[in-house]
Image (cartoon, rainbow, N blue to C red; front, side, top):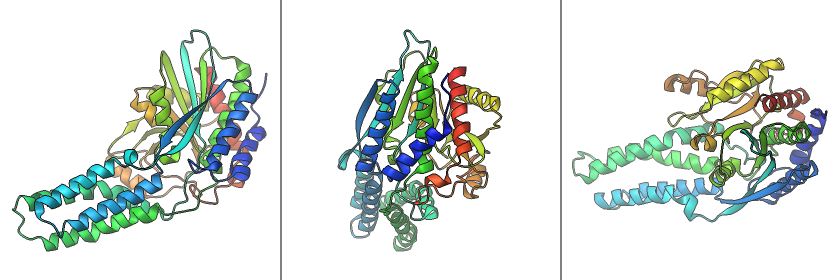
Length: 387
């Protein structure tokens, strides 16, 4: 029987991160990565489908939105109260509609299925192949992300009270709000201003490498369940690829979705139990329990992770009421911000990433540990056999 070859998987990481390099969604780098993944899957004997979709560049959308909100807020000083409220509401409507209004770029999902006649179960193994713009300042990015919605709510209340004519003073309150709101908009703009793109060895050439090598081995295993492998494009653009995939697929029968994200560095295995702070997305408890048993079978003791400030490609599946989860590897040393937020929002397993090279130019193959690739491959193959 064909066995999982960690070194062969590592060659995929070298190809994606070194030879192809940065893979920002919508660029030639991402397109070359998609072509490479498709060619590999076809060489294993799969019939491969490329699903194209449109998306709006996240950085451009953020910068346009920041300018729009700041301009609308400043305009409220110079126009009558009722009109000021209307202008700010219109700005918010345009802000929320930017994904539909702004110019689109193209990406694609690469889909390969090992079909079975009348399968009782369908297993979907996923990973994203695009890489992200480098982080300008992580603390500033988090500050803008956490502060924006509450501040917009406060500004709206202020404008409504002002329009109702019951505001005792105007300038002092406006100046206080301006002292906070304008820097938040500025932080949004600056955080999205990086022109450098990470080579993305761990995030997420590592996940793709596992998926490809597992696909090669699974082709000869002939499992009783139908297995689909999906390489998502534009994950770093707000999970655009996984959203497009879920929207177009018909999920019949019993489905299981296992997403692989950053499995190349760190000694600790984690299973993502959910995402978000206010809007919470809980992964499948049943699926997580199955994955824990698979990890224990090969000597791993996984920990639960609540990703308070991060999104994963399992989220669109959860929204479609499908059981899904994400497997990842990381170091235990993480920042203090996420645990503190976890205490505030009642999330005991909230933590940040311990891998400090995420979304940087230093996320290179030399940071990847071959032992991790082998362990992750064994976990996924054990999961396929279990299902």
